[in-house]
Length: 380
Image (cartoon, rainbow, N blue to C red; front, side, top):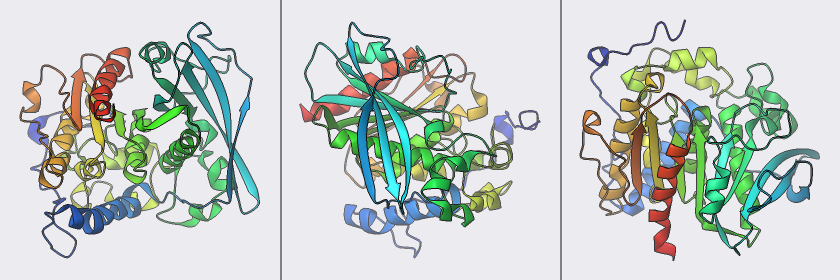
């Protein structure tokens, strides 16, 4: 029903009047790095926290890491598999999430690291890797470490069960708040705990770290990277409404539709903007701006109109202006969406749209790797 009611006609897209990332809530023009980082960036981050995604609690008592051996390594000839339990304790209660890590066997670290937030259901047959979707073999061949955790081990992707993970166990007070953490915030929290693990192990070069998510996990990737400056590069793939796409376009999936179908994803406060996108104090180009001065790359698919590829491209076109206007970097997207015929891979911000449907593929990963390598060359 939601898809039946969706708009796929550009002629019906409203004229875009977007909030200005460079004007503070008190009307101050933001033009310096100091004002951006001390005034405007915290304002924007808090507006998204309060109105869209909810909190990400930062407090806990202890965190510990232990290795287990439960699964068969699918790449024994080229990779070392580490299955890591991350145990977090708060107020006397403990929750354990599982991180699966692959390291190149033929090289010595420290290794750059790609982390995938994986929302796909665990197949239950003991397999850790879905080929293409998580391109482990190819990443290993390029000399990178890669890891993934299933969202289910942090917060189930289910409107009835989403609280059964860290919310019930560690942060039950969030369940009573209108700006309380829900599933996407919990997955972002999980990415932060994975980074805690990488930081304490000298095998990983966290200055060369990339966070990847597809679709709903892409939304969590953006929110995690906005909150956690330890990630060097963020790759939200086909993240659509509530992710990369401009909400005010009302093209494809809308705020009302996403809140109706997935009431466990966003903060309760987000429902106030159902069918009223123009009243939001933010839009998704402003979330993109929060990643700067680190690197950001959006990706779309031509047949994925539900995620509004044009809205995703406009978002990074506008959001990336912070690199040039605040940080003095030469970043621009001069082409109109309709003129795109190849990936835009440049320092700090990039984009591609591929043929095909809503998915995460090796073609996407190839562009991600090329973009990440361009950013990481500065650390060599």
